[in-house]
Image (cartoon, rainbow, N blue to C red; front, side, top):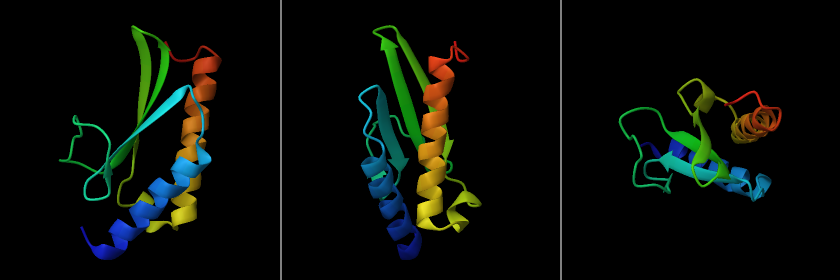
Length: 100
């Protein structure tokens, strides 16, 4: 991974961590060479952020936010804002009962 992209992704991880303080949401990063917080990362594709909403011991909702080439062309703040907005939308959908 090129140095500039690695630095950009490190900053995105930092901004998302600072913005998302929610005990109901678990955030796992699968960004090789930057942040991998799970052993089950799929490193063959685009880097991604996996968000989990634990409803009960047997009911966990998940969503992947892929950080593809197009997304990575944006500024760090824009990527972070897009990610946090996606997380908030996911949580709202669950709270509204739209995700089963």
